[in-house]
Length: 612
Image 1 (cartoon, helix red, strand yellow):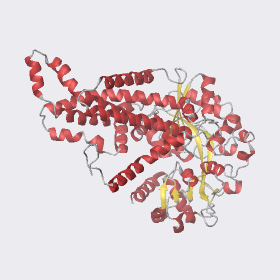
Image 2: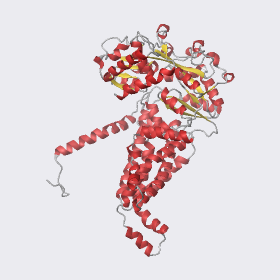
Image 3: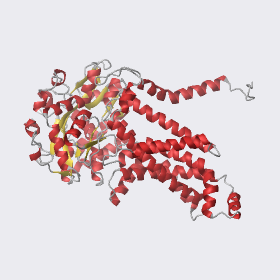
Image 4: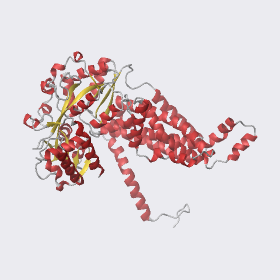
C-alpha cells in the first residue's frame, strides 16, 4: 500500500531487518557516547556532574597537544592531497596518456593495500633517503594514501563535465587560465569540498600508519588514545574518543552533501569557510604546553610514566616533555634500527639492551650527573646485559606468570599446563611476544627459556601450535582487561598489570607456575642519536628520587629497583605479593637473555605458528 507520498510502503519484515542492521552498526558508538557522560568518579578525579569527563579531557595538556598535532597534519595533508589529486584527476580525465589504464590502477593500491604494509614501506623509504621520522614523515605518508580519494572523486565529477562550456568560454575571449578558473573550477567545487573533507577525516582518524612513521614527539590524537587504552579505558578516554567520533561523522556527512550538490549554497560555503578558518587557527596556534626551545622526547611502554611527574620535571628544568609509546620490545628495536627515529630516552627490557649495545644504538651514560644513583638496590646492578652499568638505569622489574579468575577456573592454577587445558578453550590469552610464549612452552617441558637447542625449540613450537586452537588472543597490552571483563579466564601476563586488575576485582589472582616464570628489568637508556642526552640524564636522576620512584610503582603496578622508595609506599603497595613477589618466587624466575645466532629460528617458528 502506498503512503501519502505515493511511494510503496516497505514490508514490516524489511523494516525490522533494516532496523536491526542499524542497531548492530551504531549501538557500540551510541554506547561509547553514553558511558562518556557518566558522573562516576575515579581514584584521581571526582566527576561530580554529567559531562565532567569532557571538561577533564579538554584540560589535559597531552590530549590538547595531540589534537593540535592531528589538526596540523590533517590540514596540511588535505591541502597537499587536493593539489596533487586534482592535477592528476584532470590529467587522467582530459588527456589520453601512454599506459593510462595502468596509471589509473596504481591509484587503487594505496586504498587496497593493508595499512601496515603502507606504514612499513614508508619507513623503509624514509630510512633509505635519510628522512628523520617526525612531522614530515607523517605528512608524506598521509598524502600518499589520501591523494587517491581525491583522484577518484575529481574524475567522477569530470565524467559529467561538458567540454562545450570551455569552448564557449574560449570563443568569448577567455584565456585557458580564466576558463579553468571560471568554468572548470566552479564545476569541480563540490567534488573538491567533498574530497577535502574526506581527506581531512581520513588523516584525522589514521592510527596504524601514523604509529609506524611518527617520531620526534609527533603524537596524533588517535595514536595517543590507542596507547592510553592499552592499560584500561577511563571515562576521560571515552569522552575524548566520542569527540573524535562526532567530528568524523560531521566531516563525512558534509563530504557526502558536498558531492551531491551541483553548486554549494551560500550557507554551505560559509560553513566550510568558517570551519576551515577555525581549524586553521587551532592548528597554527601556540601549543598547550609552555613554550620552550628544549624538548625531551621519550619513547616508552604505555602508561609507564606519571603525568604529574612529567609536568613537575618540565617546571623544574624549563623544558617540554613529549611521550610516545610502544607495546613490545620488537617495536622499539624496529624503530631504532631504521636510523631515522630520534628519541632522547627509551625503556628497553634487559635482554634487548645487549642487542642495542651490540648494534651501537645506545649512548653511554655520564654517571657523574646521576646524584641519586645510591638509592638503587645493588642486586639490580652489574647485570649481564650491562655489567659495568654504562648504558642503563634500572626502572622497574617485571615478573611473567599466569593471571586467572578464581570465580571461573574450577581449581587453583599451579602449572603452565593450565594454559594448555582444553576445558578453557577460547578463554585463554597469551602474550604477543616471541620469547615469552616460547619461554612458557619451554619451561613447561623443563627446558630453559633461553634454550639454544633445536630439538627443544621444535618441541616448544609444536606445543604452541597445538595450543593455538585454545587461545582467544595473543595480547601484550590489554590482557588484564580481558580478565576484568571475563572474556579470558587464564592469561599469560605481567605481574604489574594483573596486580592493578586485582585491586579492582578480588577474584583475579596471579601465580608464578611451579616450573618457574621469567623476570625482567625494564631500564632507562639513551639512544646513540639522542638530541638532548644531558636532559635525558637529568630525567634519569629525577626518576631515581625516592618519591618519584614510589609514584612510578603506583602508576605501573611493577616493583622498583629503588630500595629507598619502597619505604615511602602505602602498605597496600609495599606489601602486595603481586607487585613485590617473595624471594622464593623470584628465585624460580629466569631472566630472558639474548640467544644470539639461534634467534632467527625463534622468529621462524613464531611466524609459522601465527600464520596457521
